[in-house]
Structures are given as C-alpha cells and as structure tokens.
Image 1 (tube, one colour):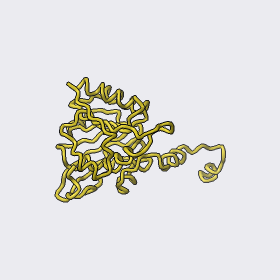
Image 2 (spheres, helix red, strand yellow):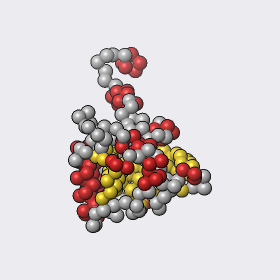
Image 3 (spheres, rainbow, N blue to C red):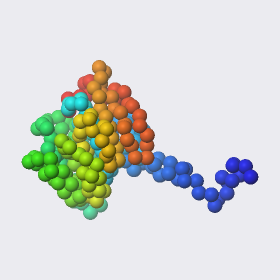
Image 4 (spheres, rainbow, N blue to C red):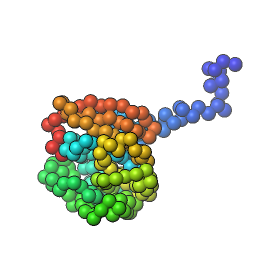
Amino acid sequence: MSLEKLLENPRIWRGSSRVASQLNRQTGLASGYPKLDRCLPGGGWPPAALTEILTAQYGIGELRLLMPALAKLSAAETHTDATEPGWIAWVAPPFQPYAPALQQYGIDLSRMLIVRPKDDSELLWSAEQALSSGTCAAVLLWPDELDDQASRRLQLAAEKGHCWAIAFRPLAARQQPSAAALRLELQSTGQGTRVHILKSRGGRPTVLNNLLNLSDRFL
C-alpha cells in the first residue's frame, strides 16, 4: 500500500497536523509588531508563561518592545469575573519608570505597582506571589540571578495566576538552562534593535533585524 493511500485512512492519527493546527490558532497576546507575531506560536507573546529578555545593557528597546501588549493589559479585564484590569507589577526595576513615556504608550498608571525588594531572594518571592495571585496581568522583574529551579517556580506561578511574566537578564544567562516558554536576546545595531529568538516553545529560533528603529528606543 502506498504512503498516500495509508494517510487517507481515517483511523490514522497524524499528530504533526494536529499540533500545527493548534499552534496556528490565535492564542498569544499580540505584541503590536506583526513581524514578531508571525514568528511566535499562537501569534503573540505566550500568556500565562515566563518570557526572558536578555540584553547587554538597558535602554536598547527592551521596554519599548513590550509597550503595546502592556498597554492592552492595563486596560483589559484579565478574568471574566474581574471588575477592573489586572495590575502591572514592576519588581526591582534598575531605574524609576518614566511616567510620561508610559502614558504616551497608553499605560494606565493607576494599574502599576512598583516593588523594591531588599535582595534577590525577596525579589523572586515577590514576583512569585504577584504572578500566582490572580490579580496581576503582567509581572516584570530584574533578577541578578535566576537558576533553572527558580525559573520553573516562576513558570508555575505564571500558569497558576494566568499572568504574563517577563524577566530581564544579562547576555551571560544565554548559556544557562531555563524553564521559560520564550527567550529573546536583544542587541543594539546602527539601525535599531535586533531581536534573536533563542527559544520558543512550539516554535523555532530566528533573528529579526531592526525590529525597533533608533527613534523608538527611549524606553
């Protein structure tokens, strides 16, 4: 019997087709950058999961990359029984978030929380509690260290609270294992910011050149 005839048999389960169909459904949070969304399974940021963004330095567009999605989350109800949008929690940011710029991008400042933990262990505990609480739409964190076990705890907490977790890490973390559903590396170029998708659950690595123009990189 030929392969074509065999595949026509209704009792044959073609797993790859089913997986592809599931991944092609719009299940992600739109990033606001169609070029990026086309490379992400689900058509956007993975919700209820951990995303890691690796950079050599801050201020090359890492926050600008998140603004469209965060603005949407700060104005949307995270659960069907919610009476107001979820919180956007910033855990140990290395700078004071610039309110006028955030407002310009549509962030509702009344839905922002800034947490200043004493040390890295308190940072991870704070992030985990915020993620699993069910009241946050997104949690951004800047840990000095994040081992595989800690990343798994954050991933589980994000799933429990149906919350988007974003961890900003140095480029050296690229060689370390992580439970994150998505890992991006951002690099500054003469024309803008290059985004390298290192790991994408259900997807594949790819490089997007100049996703952010130089004029976009004030956040």
